[in-house]
Image (tube, rainbow, N blue to C red; front, side, top):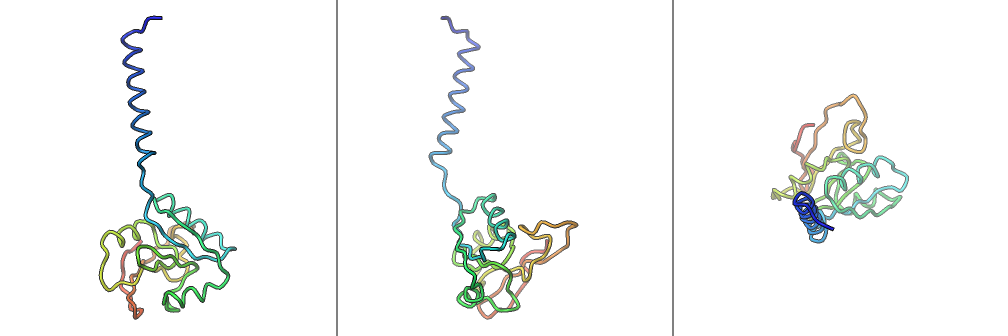
Length: 153
């Protein structure tokens, strides 16, 4: 069997592509870890977890029917609450906060912030995904519960 130059170059290119792909898989770093506390019957929370995983986060999920106890444990004030509570890099993420906002928080690591929240369940937030889009705000909150606008969506 004789190899043509074209076949030899093609095989070499495919081998190189395969090695690069294998290297990426072999040395891939897991995304930032998050721990999500959610009610087992909440479908929108599961969709939010999917959103976070699709954006590179490594999520572990703890299901509980006593979400109030979780919110008390992590000092999420009543006015700041939503359906699920997440821990990420020492911060509390309450509700359907977009992955980009969590990534920004983890990158910037601002002092004095306990976490991010979207109080309630805005219909346009990740995991809710209802249309038409309705604007909402992502808020940062400090340990005393004071808030500032983190992002407008």
